[in-house]
Image (cartoon, rainbow over all chains, first blue to last red; front, side, top):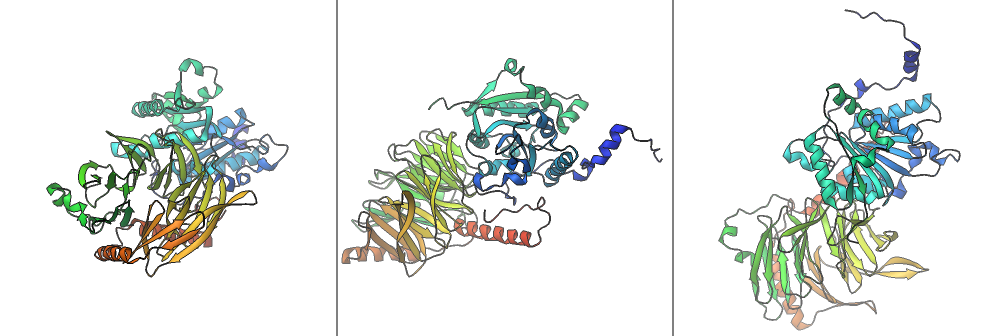
Length: 256
Length: 358
């Protein structure tokens, strides 16, 4: 049966003009092997990377992000929902999404391009790259550079043999601790209880992180956004699933 | 590297993964003992492993009383008492070892493996740190406060010891696997498949100098505050030192020694530099203050070196188990892929290649 087209209302006309990329053309299998050697474009050291290709405003003296460096990281940013939500909340901070899946990262890149084109002077502080965060964080960032880091609905890799692929493990936590500044915050959300417990256990046992109690999160404007901003989050809500949040703070090495 | 050579005051040990032999040659008596023959009946019954990539590694403790190596089979770490060459213990490793060192003061064995983990073997194995790819070399500072590791992913990392989870610095810049590192005073010297040696400030993590040797570097070993450099598939050994020039620290190549055949491994004891080639063993001494590198070839030593050379000739070298050949080929493949990508490059966004030069 052919659908009868109704006239578009004002809101929808605007949406069409923006010509945002459509997710259906950018779907990809959810799992990726982070240990295999893919070919990525990455700098040999942080100094070698030209950030102005991602953030053209970095060279604009009038911009909020003039001469700044990336301070927030969304690892496994998916379709970029959180980036778009955070952008107006932290106008002065550069926020970067990292995504390992080719098509998905292309979608985010196209999406940001469209958003910038349609709303000049907005969304200049967000960008996305396709990379493997497990391997290449120190190629992009210097010690203590990052103030906030997000892991929203990471791949749970249910099978025990695939646990080593999880984005949170002993090895990766040391790297995250390296790029994080002291007192920087790491936000994790998942709908899988087993993964939530895994993450809490690894962060708590690592020694350079401390869990932030739920009471202390009340004033944090980011927390509310975490549940709904990403596509995965909306899906969980639709299915009435549980959501587990845990926030950790990078602390000084207590032994030093 | 399926061969390795290790030296202490009175002994030269030659270990070969492919033929599964670890020969202990006493410089005093001239006796030869094959340690692998003494690993027990259970060991003999395991079939020989000539399909996995392995790297022969061995080390003496700083005081020379202990020796550890990895035999061919069963992911073992075999520890020996060197006074009478008796087996102390066989420890099981989680993965094949790629590097064995002893801590300089406390004589704890530290092992790096193919997964990228580093374990310290005290009473029980303790996981010190982990990389996301294979560990290729390990150094521990003299005060045992820091551990320096390098890996297949172009990284050199300084971590606290024993709490290796706390990273002091990543020293980034190499553009291929980092095959060797050593500590020279306040510097870290690293050598890589990208042909370069790089000198890093140990306290700040900054790059101070780099030197291209035009051939991939296979190993870097400290000797008398200088360093001996072994190259991939090459007859040359370079001796380098650090030098202050116009207020900047630089790397200076002071001598290149060329041998008749390809160099397989280097070993250092005190000021002695031992070089293992495909069919011979050579001994040099180094006088660092006068930059003199002297070949030892008196009659007595020549006789001993000949005996050692004959032992080496009994070894075979398989290409498919050789880790360094594998790493080299992988690097070449990657470069080819990148060239191809660049030739048919589409939009910049879609290009997923690694930059060769930055």
